[in-house]
Image (cartoon, rainbow, N blue to C red; front, side):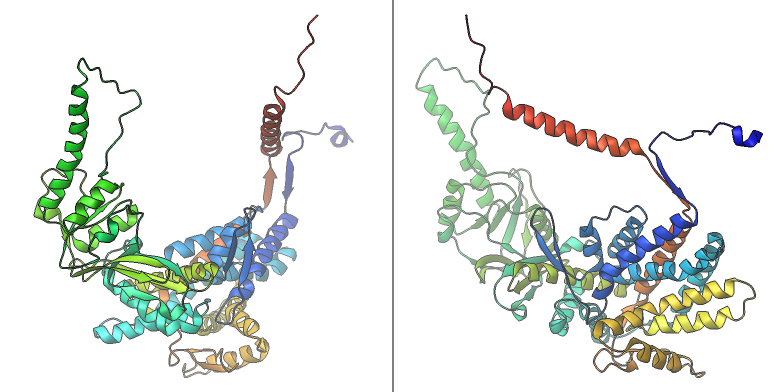
Length: 561
């Protein structure tokens, strides 16, 4: 009786929403499954694309997991974890973003019945971590090294990795064409880690096949003044001067004041201005440079001055383009034209201005440093070209990874089936509940080949049964067998050149297991009402301010007596 009369202890502020226990965990799992269902159909070569229309009216068509997750604007706190792992997979490896989201959601889906039956989440987490560790060890064991091959062999192997990535993208129809282009671009930048050394320029019009690779730098013709057309548009072995100063008459500052006692002195001030600009231009010409590029404006006077002396100039060049020209030609960007020595000038074999579609491009090729490349993309619609750029970014990342961590595994769901088989076998050696949990982890890995079949319109159960039978062969010859997208059967992924770098799979399994364990370890969500009301008040006050401003001064004045 005494216990019943005890007053209730109020710990949290009124209006605080707390949900805890099993129901909360199941709700989080359901939210993550719902997110995965959005990107589920984009997996694989027969995956569908998503059209995302944001509040600003911008339309994005993509089947890249990370791009879709970023644009979805998810508010559920647990489901946001899946967005984060997709982003981390994209920045770390570049590909496998849909895979990582699907795996994490499937691990949670398999854990859900156990949680509902009263299994403690920590037992699940422990088993999942063990299974993840065993899976990664097995991938490392199955991976095949491409090290020690000749340059040509290595190029063709890297092109196969790029083609596997591109096969699931919008430009999959031309994957061989783009795969060799990507490999050439990555080899061109060598050991340089900076991705911005590979420029991708988009020019609407033409077909995908009209895209080309420049072993050097290409950028769109900048804004130019009269006199530009009189400049030469092609040079062989020119010296290149890179500047970060403006070559035009500068107006005085607003607060500048000059007091003259004699009107004749005014002319000397005007002359001084002209002398300064002529002095700068003269120094540029004396440096021996035939191409002058500047990040800031090059005025009409300077353009005509250079044209008269057979020098090409371009002002307002984008910062990243200027940096890539500097890296490629061996030049250094100057902030002054005083004392320009030969060491700071860049050089290239050929500089020319070429028409590409509707645009004119300045192209530097045969650069001595050579640590840069530019891909000029052509295509019909703008959205199409943008998706092609995202696809090439994934392929470039994959080829870079494959060059550094030179081990590959069989794609097409083969590696997932093999790990699944291995974990099922391992689970039988464990006594206790862990056996069930590791088994469920192994079953979750089958989502990749299953989804590949579903997306291609094949009978997933039939194909998976064939795969299980093939992978269960005691000789181990079935290990490289995966889904054959073309026939709807199974095929040896290795001999069909469906390869992916081992690092993609390792990263995906690591991230998905971590995310699943993190969500399973949350048993209570506390929602603070303050933050919600604060947002509401901020919005209301902003509206109030806006309205006040709109109607102020409109009222009629008081009548005078």
